[in-house]
Length: 166
Image (cartoon, rainbow, N blue to C red):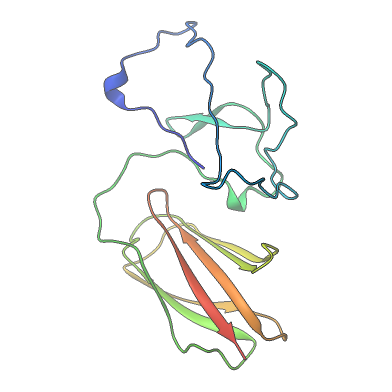
């Protein structure tokens, strides 16, 4: 999740504080999240800080500690005007041990790829530092058949592609 503050909110002077910033994240049915591999998860305590939540200002880390595997971290950036993110799976269902995808609409942006099974287990993570207009990539699926979810994120957009492997 990424929280941003609109530039029209004003200016915070050096050394000033905002006071407490509180937030609540919930599912629409209020059921519990699976936080087993959530780096930022911390047992809640009233008005407690969490050093595993990072804050970036103009691309620089100013608070918190990044996870060791930074490939899935996201940095705040100015929005760019571009065409909508499109991810195309070439052949579905997939017969082999890898899937071929094309990514369009993310030109000159960083793109994160995360493949999970239906249980939410991460099977593959990758990052493209700077994309071209059309990117072609191979995603390893392994040997076992099943249904997989490929999440493709840019700074501003996200899409999920369902992959059926026979």
